[in-house]
Image 1: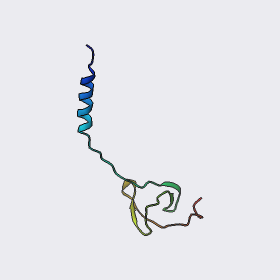
Image 2: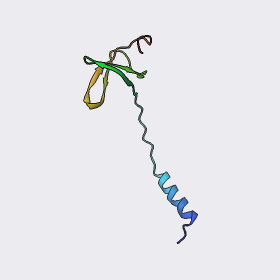
Image 3: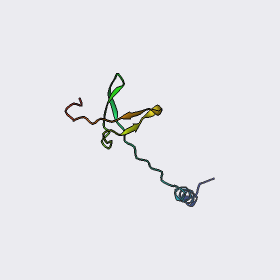
Image 4: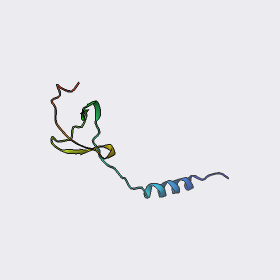
Length: 72
């Protein structure tokens, strides 16, 4: 049984018509170094100093901004 192009078009239009975009912005950093409860994280440009930031596994952290000359 051959598939008609109109059938494919109708199915695609139905699927695309019901699509709702769900976007979420996140700031993601890279952990460069960890020791004594302190982590050096690179790439979190949108984070402000003294802000409590949520992390995976329900941890929170206080942010300290370092000059770029300190980051390896």
